Structure formats: C-alpha cells, structure tokens
Length: 313
Image (cartoon, rainbow, N blue to C red; front, side, top):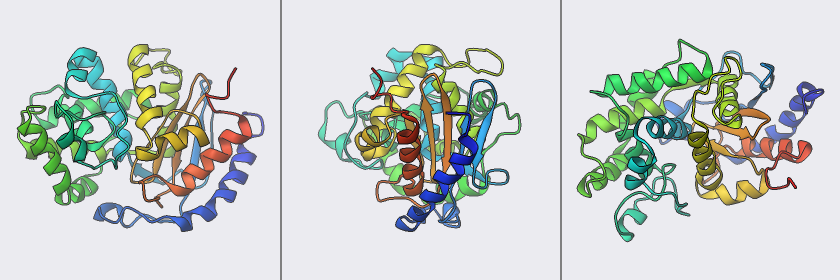
C-alpha cells in the first residue's frame, strides 16, 4: 500500500471532494459552524514513522468531539478497570442517534448501552480520576500528548465555551444519569469537563497517529512503549466497529470494514489492525453526524487496498 500511496491518496481525495456538497457542517454548535464545508484532508501513519497526506493538513486543526470518547474510555479502563466501568455503562449498540435519551427510559437498569453514545460518554467522563475538573482534563491531555508526541496539545477554549452554552440536551442526559445513580457529581462540573474533552484539538496527522497506536494494539511505534494495554486497545477497537460511526456503524463495517470513530467536527480516526492509522477531516456531515466525503474517501481507500478486516481469510 505504501509505495505509490502519496499520489494515489491525492487522486482518491480529489475523487471524493464532490461529496462535500452532500453534507452540512454542525451548525448547532456555533464554534463549529465556521468550518469550511468543502474541506477534505487525510493522513495515513505507518509503524516505521512515515506519514502520507493529501489535502491541507499543515495549518488545519480539528476538535476531537466524539472521537475523544474512545480515548477517555481507554484511560478510564486503565485507571478503574473493566469491572468498575461496565457496571455503569453497557457494551451493546443502540441503533438510536448518538444524543438519544430513549434507551435510558426503556431499559432496566437505566444505564447507557455503550460508551460511544453521549449518555455513555458522560458516564465514562464522570469516571476520569482527579480532584477537580482541571486535574481530570489535564490527565486526559497528558495521555493524548503521550500518544501523539505533541507536548503542546490542548483544547480549544472558544469551542469548549460554545459547546458549554449549547449543551442543554447533554445536561438533560446527565441529570437523568444522576437521578439513576450512574453519576454523582455536579452536572455543571461534568459538562465543563465533557465540553473541554470534546474540544481537544489535533492535526490530521496526529489523528492518524492515534489510530496507529490502536492499530498496533496500544503500542507506540516511536518509543516501543505500551501506552495502552492490549486488552484495553482491543475493547476500544471493538466499540469502534460496533458503535464508532453512530447509528451507521453496521453500514460502515460493510462499506469500509475497519475500526473507526467519527466526530461532529468532521473527523474520522481509523485503525487498520497491524498496518496503519488513518485520520480524515471533512466537516460536511450526513444526517447521522458522519463526514460525508470522509466516509467516501475511506471507502475508496479500503476498496483499493483491501483494508477490510472482514475480507481476510
């Protein structure tokens, strides 16, 4: 896949650009509404340190949004253990939109079905270890700095504030979780932490590096260090397959066939097991909240290079 990848990446990206017209940016969050709906970029990161890119990646940053759910889950599993985490959040896909409250009302006990929907992510973020919001977000940032190799990585304060001001549905989910003893902290503190988590900024190559670490079962190829335990990386990748692309995860598994997580900023982080990590940024979203052109680009890439984990003998 690597030999001619740079030229072919540009070709596949150019073929996919037309699909940006089929989506719209996440304008319900004012801080994301200014994104260029026609932007599309990609990076593919390999274990030997090479990274191939196409599109504008040098000066473009994106906020992780829901992609952060995978990283928070990994850190909480490392700090709290599987037993603690999965007593409070389930392991099953929902088939509902990522911000739906319906399953909390119709299942018993009233715990979120998985960590990739907003209710589940709020429950997981609640489990971050620390004495206050500042300590907890700093611990998550340090974890991401370790994975990406960027000691300056932080969150976008403007977008965090924008999300904080428009997070009434997430507040509703949090109050419901508090009523049923899934969380027990002040809801505004949790919202402060969660919006900062979602507003963590990365470049597209950094997004690809995160995907690479998951693709290598939690090992950082630069240092050789096991930054995420293999078991934790495996759990996270499984959730990425079953729930990572919102309620289009089954379709994505058929069309692309690699563990992936999307966010409403237009990012997609993908992990091709044992091979590479992929970061994509295309702010125009479909009605499920996934990057329209980013999906098409990954579909073309997977088809051309037979990346699907389900096509292997």
